[in-house]
Length: 112
Length: 113
Image (cartoon, rainbow over all chains, first blue to last red; front, side, top):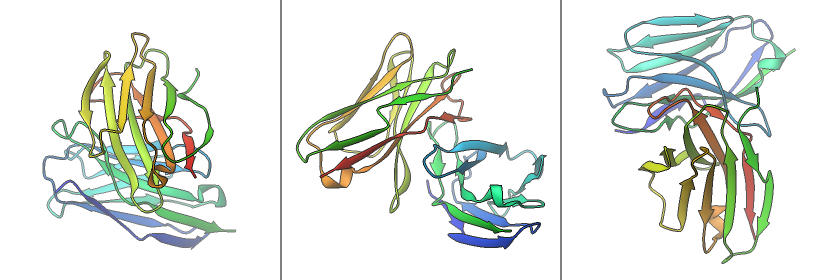
């Protein structure tokens, strides 16, 4: 119930394409869903986060879509660039959990 | 504004030894959490500290411990190191307990040989 399942494990997209990374959860108590971006040798950096009272949130080229009934959320990257090549993690938390539960990560490669 | 500082960046230890890792949170952040990152298990929660008190502990053996000081700096300790403890240990800080919009440090890469 504490798991967050992320797919795909890896993704290759051409520059300008729209990579989509998906996550699914079981615990309906989760109420905070962030996405993190991690470059080699660095810690994860918070990209964007959403709460279940909205279905979509955009920040720059990054968009989270949230489907509460399906217990799924996804990250879309518009006009992707080679500099977006990184590992992306979805996560979820709740007041009861007192921690972030992370997905397994998606290694994204944007080809020039 | 300085980020989360973790020291040391790299460590090599021998099985059976113990190790202490240090984390200085962003100024004004009072909550510090620790995560272990490995290729097989991903990011796993270790502990969360707020106001020098451990609020939550992950599913790790008692060899893993931590503490937080009055200036919010935190340390974690692993005793009787095992090969499987080799990992990237990440510290994350946030303004207060229950705020999971973390800022992570760059981590300490621990290798146990």
